[in-house]
Every structure is written in structure tokens, then in C-alpha cells.
Length: 332
Image (cartoon, rainbow, N blue to C red; front, top):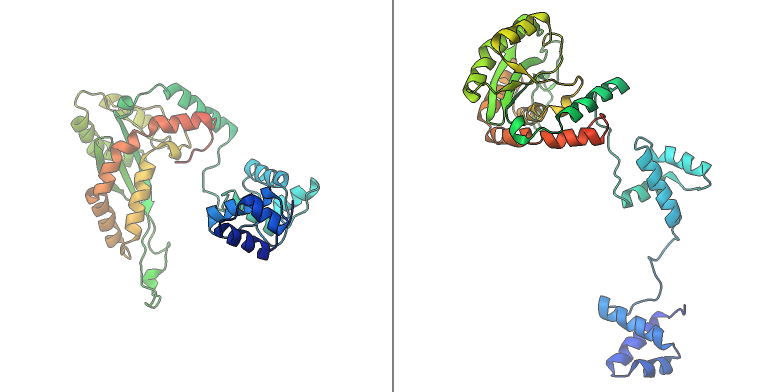
């Protein structure tokens, strides 16, 4: 491919502006007509005199397209590998590149370095049970999931907040021994949020039975007067004790079969996360302030209430994702 100096490129455009044809310009400058045509086309497209050189100026790219594909494939196959790890793997395959080059290629492909998400360890047996549960419930419709009362407990911690100009005080520091996390039990359905209950101390079967008798059964009677409500709970020992099984039998409450180690399947976890984000923005430097803020947020945040039906309706999608992941973690 013929190299054309900047002076000749400028001359080509100037002569075209003087109404010379491509043939005349090529003859006057001793260039091929195809070369003149390409330069004029680039001038029309970009507004400059153009160049026949493809790609960017500067240092030659250190990796070939094949090398780039290998880098991306290695990263996709094992996302936990750092650029240094990939550098060693590529070196064993005969591809010698710097780790900084690998990071640039990953960025070009949109693979941004992120901290790994925290998930519970799932053994093969756990994955098998989760997958089987998903297969058993993949036929459930949205209407069937709208009959479920989802429940769970979570913890909120005392914390303070301050401006960047405010001096650090004791209230700005997390003091776990002084202010242990407060446990809350809550529930919700597609129709809205259920009651929120403060749990004092450690949850056991007696406390759990009292919470359900006082705060769950009235909600079930209100939202499901036809008796079609189904209660969801995890497999904590206090939930599955003989005492609780007797309680469920006497109350007539239907219990949803639920796989263990599956917080990513329970949509109430998303409500907890939203609540914690809002609570974190407020002053909760004492236990009293924390409790007041959590309760006020749960009962009066309109966005939380609006999300209930959306989260319940996400259950078919969660099950499909779980089947695709073969029982492994899903992105919820």
C-alpha cells in the first residue's frame, strides 16, 4: 500500500476543490486513482485529509487477535484469576505479555475487576437438593407464588454518621460488644409487607411459635381468608423442631417445602437489603434510634411496599436461573 505524505494528502483535497477529477489529480501527483479516491472519501467522511494507515498511531499492539481471545477465554473460565495469574498461564502457552497489557485487554472486553460476592458455601449435595427443588417447582405459575407468605430474620447494627469535617467520636465507630446487632423477624406477600417483630436474644422454638401465633396467623387470615396461603421459612432448627411441627399441624398452616442454604431464592432478602440501605443513611447511634428507624422505614417507605409484588413475581425467573446454574448460586 502506497504511503502518502501529509503534503500530498492536503494537495489532493486542494485540487479536488479546484474541480479537478480523480484521474487528473492522480496524474498531477503521480498517484494511483484508487489511492486518491480513498483519501477523498476519508476527507468527506471525517472532514480531514485522511490517511491510508489503518489503526492508531504509536507503539505496535503487543497482542494478536488470537492472543486477545485466549486472554478473555482464560479469564471467563476462571474469573478469580488475577492478571498475574493469567500472565503465568499465557506464558506456559507461549504468549509472553505484561500483566498491564492483560488488564488493558480485559478492560477492552468489558471485564472490570470486582470484589467477589459473598455467598454461602454450597457442597455438591446442597446443589443437588436445590436443583431438585427447582425442578419440582418450575411449573408453578405467578398466581401460585402470590399465595406464598415469605419470611426470614435479619440483623441491624447500631451505627452513627458524621460529615467529613466533623471530628471522630465514639458514636461513629461500630462497637459490637457494647451494641450487639438487633434481630428482627418479618414477612411479606405479593399484597404487601407483613408485621415486623423485634427478637430479644437468640431465637428458639418457643419464641418462634409465639411470633407466628401472634403476628403471622392474623396476617394469613386477613390476606388469605380462603385458607390457600402457604408459609415459607428456612430450615433453621427452631423452625423444624417437633414443637413447631405440632404447632403447624394444629394451626392448619401449609408449609412450603424449601431447600436449605438458599437465601438467594428468598425475595425477602431483597427487602432486607433495601431496608438496610435506607437505615444506613440515618442516625442509628443508639439502640433506641436504630429500632425506631428500622420500624419507621419498614412501615412507611412506599418503595418497599411497591416492590412486594415485583419480588414475588420474580420467583419463576429465580427457579429458571437455578436450573440453569445446576443448583449453584444465582445472582439474587
